[in-house]
Length: 261
Image (cartoon, rainbow, N blue to C red; front, side):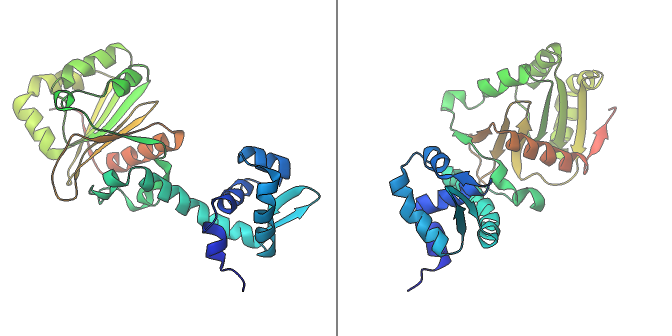
């Protein structure tokens, strides 16, 4: 009895990895088994199954995807990337409210690869992540969409300005109202600096903040039951940074620039 294609693709880690590797182009057998960290003898039976299923073809000792194989892997690769993102940190993602993510970026959530869930201790709960802050000081710019500000925000902002870092913030309308009420002079002083750009988002923010610099991105999300804790995601891939830039642009385009108060 012929095997179903889903079984062929997903029931074997070796076959799945072969298909994903060939997605980048034809490969010689030696390159395939070296890249996958296995042996020719171990791969040959899997190659035979893939060929008999018309997913892979070979000539001499070189293998490549057939048109059918390429079509399947074109659809398979994004699914696997997305599953990998959630699978790595499923407890975090599965307990967070995600409705605030624009639909076009939610479909590209796989770009947030290589993320780490950080769970600060009680004594560290109100401290900024030192890795992120030090990376920010080495950056040309720092951008954030946020519903809250660190207690030492003004002091840190001026330290970053002294390092020549451009600061771009999209802040929640309720946060803006609080700053006007409680920290008017500090906000006015920052606005007078050419490196500081602030926008006010008039809608609802169902997350704490999304912040990125030239090296990494942080996401601090609210639980889907409304509770707030101190855990957050720290991601550092180039794709994650591009995702962060587009997220920031989405909110900037729906916000009002703050030029004076």
